[in-house]
Length: 416
Ligand code: AMP
Ligand code: MG
Image 1 (cartoon, protein in one colour):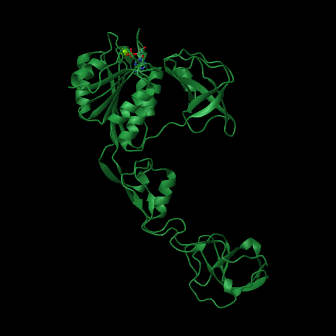
Image 2 (cartoon, helix red, strand yellow; image 1 turned 90 degrees about the vertical axis):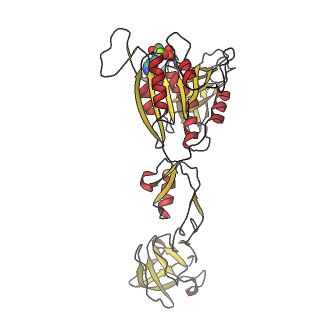
Image 3 (cartoon, rainbow, N blue to C red; image 1 turned 180 degrees about the vertical axis):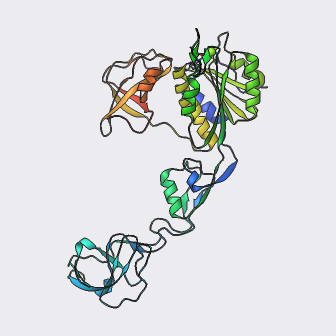
């Protein structure tokens, strides 16, 4: 097959260039499905949803108190009204009201037609059926108009929003029971390497446990992904080819780890070249230099490096944005913050580095960061201790203690 781009071995491709290449190559899937709202969290909306009703549907009280008509009062004067009934949330007051009468009302209860004002119960004095209102009682307050949140026909949530808890609440308030979302992406992943063994086995000399599949399985948790663990493939080009060809028919995206470089046991690039289209890049990134990206028929393929931290970094920088785009969301960028670096950081110019760091919020909006430990690409313990990447640009030649650096937090919550 024709290669869409061939390796530029001499020059390292920048992170931004590789991200741009991937962004231009992949497209959102077209297929969609209808799901009940209760299963829609995190799914990508395929069709915008319009409100079938006003929210709130009826005028109601914003406070527990007393509903009255402003026609019965003189502004700036204390007054008394007789309570003739109660409007409960879910049980409106439906009888007549005469002049100088009011209705006990609770938050969310429908406002009786005669009333245009509610005064909070704390502000009045009640003696039997009579309520005394103070002189500073303001008319027209504490009322939620029908449609004051959303009016009938207004867009509730626009496609292609990835539905949040807030969106689900809003859709439910409008009585929307089902939504049309993009179908889930089918994603397969596997490890390559003769040295890898499963967790059920005792290690033999030369073996290591396959950690990448567990790392990837965690990274791939998303309501829009249906993931399949395809196990470990030996460093055998025939087995690899069989796996690629058969898996390509079943998945929208395939992710492998290991064998992506140019060593004698690295077969990913040449195998993909044989059965698909290849973009192979040597990237100006550390860790994670070699990345094989391409496709086999309609299945996108990401051949990540073998070292676990290179997997972590390249997944986040290249695979995650691509999968999000395929799943149908608008382009997003990871949150980046500026933090004061507590220690010196060593770095040689030439590659963009993603060092594993520990970020702290010392006051709202004020951050410090330090390395989580040594920065070798096999060191999972350091990555486990870390809560962010410290992002150092290609041309950076080191950081002095006290300098401001860019960080990408892994999570929203961080230690204080
Ligand atoms: P490779 O890219 O296949 O040369 O692998 C680079 C390094 O990553 C080697 O030290 C491998 O043993 C290690 N490695 C490859 N795959 C895995 C894996 N699935 N789990 C843990 N380490 C791996
Ligand atoms: Mg290998």
